[in-house]
Amino acid sequence: MKRIVVFCGSSAGKDPVYMEQAKLLGAALAERQLTLVYGGAKVGLMGAVADGALNAGGQAIGVLPHFLQQKELAHEGLTELILVDTMHERKTKMNELCDGVIALPGGFGTMEELFEMLTWGQLGLHKKPIGLLNINGFYDALIELSKTMTSNGFLKAENRDMLLCSNDINDLLQQMEQYEPPANSKWISPAQS
Image (cartoon, rainbow, N blue to C red):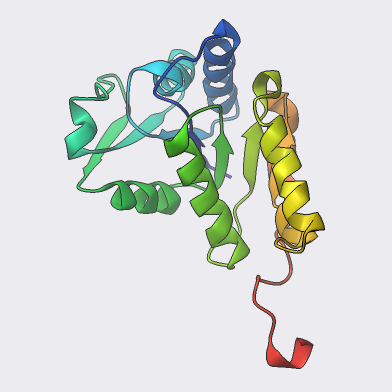
């Protein structure tokens, strides 16, 4: 892994631990000489993870749609800021640039980005590790939901297990380094049915 995309909120959240952990994640990426790829803003968890990486001597590449450049207040200190036209182009560019994915806490946008990367992995479109940094149990309900999807026959266990989870940055990065993607994509051939 050389570049990690981080999906996260443009808000800070109510508990200061979210901002603290975002900064620590950015610093941890820099210490491992992993380039941060993220949404390009200087606010909320997005700004914190970028500042963490940059302040630790790392590199941070932002990908931001033109229409959000003013709303999300583009980070001026980035190694590189790539401007795109649409949200879909943003995700596509982030996917092209990264070797792995980490989701920090966030809202609908973070969930949408995370689930698209999971879906692409499930379909065999990429083989990148995808991790949840489960700060303060933020993702506990999502982890339980994925188990419910599996127990009800809507998600294979091997696809559920694509989602790596930890509340510890170093542990999550280690899981990602050791990740083995599922041997089969979601679709079953006629011979297997």
